[in-house]
Image 1 (spheres, rainbow, N blue to C red):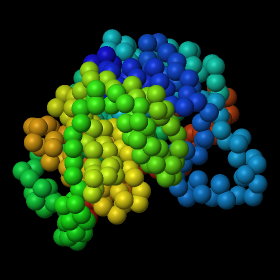
Image 2 (cartoon, one colour):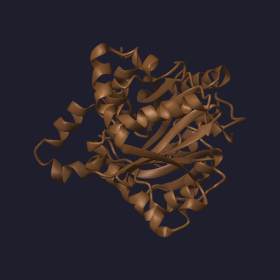
Image 3 (cartoon, rainbow, N blue to C red):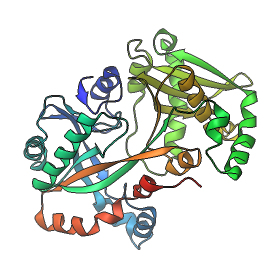
Image 4 (cartoon, rainbow, N blue to C red):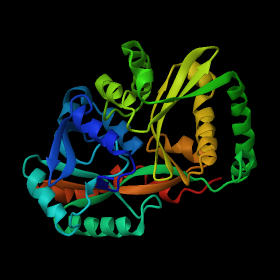
Length: 351
């Protein structure tokens, strides 16, 4: 791996630099991947706070003032912030503050791992020292997103479902009846995606998912997907879901260091919902990871409520934010708790 905290293949991280999300500008700060974008400050706010602000009189006109040009340390294709392997955790935050914090009024080091079961002890210790150094440099630490994962430590699907409540088992089994009408085809990244029409079809389904998302942060480009899907060296497998011969969804995954890394999906609506494809794909991935002798299924940041219902565990990250204005920095320390909406999942109990 090229970077500390990296769960993804090098080739995927490289595609982010070559084809960043639409409107993003890729940067490099002290050897660390970074980017700049116009950031809506409500993106990570608790839902009640976001809705309250957006319903305020005149938001349609003054809401644009909440979009700040922001520099981010990290990428949107990696689960965690990526740092040079030989970097010093005590000095890197200061280097990043000088490189980026002086240019913009807001800089964010995103997705710093809290102690993570997906990383080794050495990486966890490094990240703890890095977070402590961020605070010394004037960064404010906020709890970040909840990364869903499942240890592959069960014998079979029945054993996995036995961990859930009886009511949930009954509901999930009912939804899974639809999978009998769905055919799953694994397709390796590479030559299968040479035709432009093939890429167009897959990108259209990705765009469907993006369009129905409640929060829009990064919209990946068609060029990004074309490069990833056509790259036979990245080891990616696309699980294509068909119903009555028509593609109703796909899921791009990578196997890295014994883990199944679930990265991107595309759905055709309403067929994907009618076939309960989210549930079908979840249990397909668990079974596939089990069959390959993998240790974990890493399911990403989105939809924590649904993933919790399906039996996922969660590990939190932290964001380190730096505001150039000291008065805004002081205000952010007081208001930070309103931007930690995923913290509930760190201690969420399965019911």
